[in-house]
Each structure stands twice: as C-alpha cells, then as structure tokens.
Image (cartoon, rainbow, N blue to C red; front, top):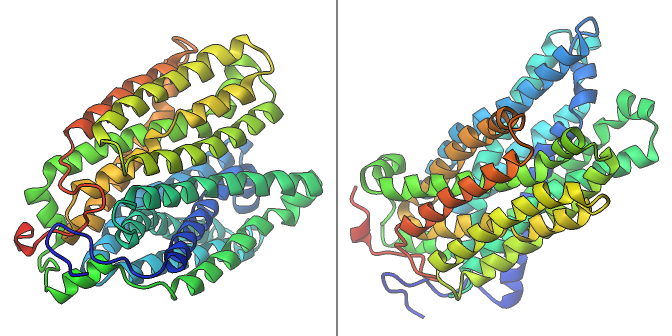
Length: 441
C-alpha cells in the first residue's frame, strides 16, 4: 500500500504485533504514572524519613508536598526537550528513554538513606530525583499518545489512544491498590520504618523491565515516512508551533485544563474533600476513589473508540455535559444519601470520558512534523499551571458552598468544550501524515 499525502501509511504489522505495541505502551505508561503518584500516597512517611525530626510535623509535610510539586514544575521543560528529539530523531528512542528516566529515580528513592544518615543531602537528593521523575512524566503521556496513534491502523487511532490513556489512569489505580495492600499486610510501624520502600523498589524494577521490552518496539510508520521524504523540521519544532499553530496550542491547553479538573477534583481531591465537608470515613472515600479511577479508565477507552466514528465536536458537547452532571452527582447527591458515595463515584468516573477525548483532539490538531512537540507544549504547560492552581482555587471556594468542586468542574467543562469546538482538526480520524508543504522551515 503506497502512502499519499494525508493518508496513514500501511499498518506496521499483524494484529498480534499491533496488540503487542499497544500493550507495551500502556504498560509502560501505567508504571510511569504509578511511580509518579506513590510519592503522594506516602508523603507523610517520606516527611518523617527525609526531614529533621526536630521540625514540626506540618512543616515536614509541607516540605514533602513541595518536593511533590517540584515534579510538576519539571514536566514542561522535560517534556519539551524530549518532544524536540522525538520530532527530530524519532518517537521510539524518546519513548524508551522516558521509562528509563522514571525507573532509575524511583528505584533510587527506594534505596536512598534518610536524614539521619545523609543529613541535608537526603532531601536535596530526593529533590533531584523528583525533578527527574517530573521530566520523565512530561515526555511519557505526549510521547505515548503520538506513538500508539501513529502505529494504529486506519480508523483506529482514537481507540489506540484511548487504550494508552486507560493505561495512564490505570497507573494511578495500581498505586492506590499497592498502598492499600501494603497497609493491610504490614503494621503502621513497619511501613514507617522500611515498608514504604517496597512500592518504590517494585516500581523501579518493573520500570526497567518495561524499558527493556520497549526496545523491541518499532519506530512509527509516520516518522519513517517523514524521514524517507526528508520532511522532518529543520528548525526548532517549538518555533514552528508558535508561528503556525498558535490556535491549536491554545485550544489544546483549554481542553487539557478540563482534563486536569476532572482528574484532580473528581479523583485526587475527592477523599479529603468528602472527609472534611461531609465527615465520610477515610475507608469509604478510599474505596470511592478506587472505583472512580477504575470507571474513568473504562470511560476513556470507550470515548477513544467512539472518536473513530463520531465527530469530535459532537462528542465534546456530550462528554462535557456528562462531566458536569457527574460532578454534581458526586458532590451534590452523595452527601445526602449516606453509604452511596462509592456508587456516585462510579457515576462520576463513567461521566469523565472527556479525559479520553483530549489527546485525540490534540493529535488531530497538529501535523506530524511537530505533533510530539505540539502535544507536549500544550499538555505539560497547561497541566503544570492548572493542575497546580486547581487545589488552591477549590480551597478558596469551598467555604462559600460545598458544591464549589462541582461548580468548578462544570465551568471548566464549558472551557474544554469551547476549546475542542474551535480546535483546528487538521487531520481526520486515521489520517496522520501531511505533505511536506505543510511544514515550512
């Protein structure tokens, strides 16, 4: 099958080969997100290990969350650097390197001596490792979306992207399960003493395994086609983006804002908000968070598949409406029906399919020569800004009304729908290659 401008080259192998590609990509993404989130789940224990015991507990906790936030700050820079090389040197090399850059710091965190051994060197080393993790996660999601979509057969790019997104959210679920099991089989004292290291060691070892397996993946057909036609951008891809694709960048940042609102407000912040606002037990909120994440994983895969056959604009309106409705169901109805939080959390997760629509829209908004950089710039900068600001905004609004989280999600859902509606869909479903005339140097 010959490739023509605007058409996807022949698929890169048999169905079995494609399934292997999607499985390895999703597995690596899940492990990277697992490595990234377990730090938050173990923040209290880490604070006791890596900061002076003479400090107040709240100060140590704040310093630990500062280290967690440092990972987010490193995301845009790491993502842009890796995206540049992904657009210029190849998707596969960067996709493999991102797993290594996540696995090694995670493994070292599990082996790092605490403050009683290294003194001030302990938190400083931890900061450096956390920054490396942030740089890795900044390249993983955009790189993964580009890689699987360009390997997908015609008309299946949305489904492939949904599978990868499901793998990323599955990593959060995996982290939650591992921490729950850890606390179930070990005493609190044992976890605080040495047990906290186990999730990091497991993540590091499995991450290295994923890196080895990814070496067997093939370069994407789209990049090989660009390379053979000498269509790779000779100038900085970011420069091309800022000159020719500003609208795509702004619309992609708007949709990513909605993605962060869904994940942060409906999944990550839900347990502490429900405990504080409505005095729900910690055990019930943790179960609800697990169920919401599982349902979110199913939802993003389903919406990704639908994007192959339905218009993005129509799906955006539907998914945006469902997202707002799910938020009000979770924060508006669950408190008035004691014991039903888990069920409403499941509803909110199923209504969060907009998360799976975001990468599909971004992939179609950017041509192949700057696709990796376009996704990385839009996604990472938006996530760094709005992912960091959302908890603060919710904290300010909650004293005004307990429905503040739902109102926030509903408003940002409108932002995402508008962003998706006006996003330049340069590529239709299954079309991931443009002619060289689309890429002025």
